[in-house]
Amino acid sequence: ICLQLPPYFLLLQCDSKENFLFHRRSDVLMMTPWFAPIVWEGTYNSEILNEQFRRRNVTVGLTVFAIKKYTVFLNKFLETAETYFMVGHRVNYYIFTDRPEEVPKVPLKEGRNVVVLQVQNYPRWQEISMRRMELINSFSQQRFINEVSYLVCVDVDMRFNDQVGVEILSNLFGTLHPHFYAAERQSFTYERRPASQAYVPRDEGDFYYAGGFFGGTVMEVYKLTKKCHEAMMVDKAKGIEAIWQDESYLNKYFVYYKPTKILSPEYLWDDDLGRPEILKKIRFLALPKNHAAIRNK
Ligand code: UDP
Ligand code: MN
Image 1 (cartoon, helix red, strand yellow):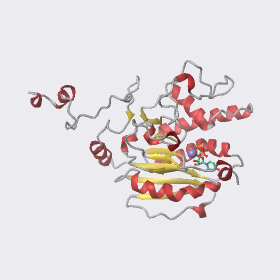
Image 2 (cartoon, protein in one colour):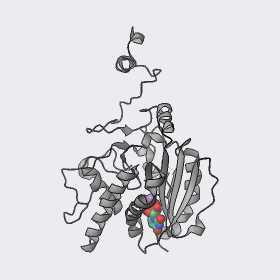
Image 3 (cartoon, protein in one colour):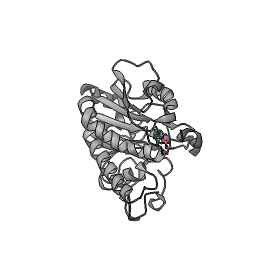
Image 4 (cartoon, helix red, strand yellow):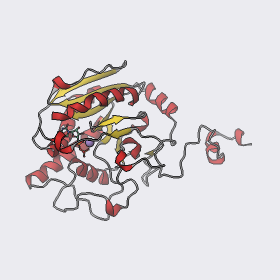
């Protein structure tokens, strides 16, 4: 009887894992109250999604900053991205660096390019991290808008460890911070000083998002980075820097411009937190680093 009903009915009626329409998990939140999907392994069908994005011949831009000593991370980052990032799709890697001669030559698959963008450095690591907003913003307008459909903006002190594909793409997406995905709102480390442009009141905010993985269409990333950079400049003029730099301004933005898709911590994990049962895949993993040694000249 069940088989004669239309497929969407199957989804409602048949509790069978063999049914390819069965992509559901009961142990995690799969959707926000504003109907944005939260991407966990087991909640989507990558065959269907790959076909949809291939048909559109989508090109994805991956922005990454390797300023000063952080160029040491590029080799592993690019090598693992070739194995796991947007496999089968067109990719431009945009590498912002002050040391173009230190960008390694990594063999690339067809349809994938490295673009080195030379930029200045800053003495403080906090400023290097925050200025990413300004640079992504200005290059979005000058260049990215003509070359790619989506931007994915990530930290470089990372390695890909499993598939990161088109399931992440949406108009505007953020990633649940691995320290806070299961935490209560009152423990979120939003900026709490009302004088800061990044201020989030105690009774607002949905999730705590990671600064190291966000993206969307070039237009949405342009708007996000513009707002965040402007907020930083207002604060800077008053001698204020938000508690977690760019991450704080990003979190403020997402309170009022809610993401249309949210990535689970599978997409930004740190093994200092162990490997809880809830994680079926660890796709993008923080590398251990000696902060004192690597952050200064
Ligand atoms: N970064 C850089 N050079 C620096 C400091 C930071 O290129 O000297 C960039 C790099 O892309 C890095 C990001 O800024 O991944 C954020 O800094 P970091 O990863 O040190 O912050 P954390 O993840 O430890 O909070
Ligand atoms: Mn990092």
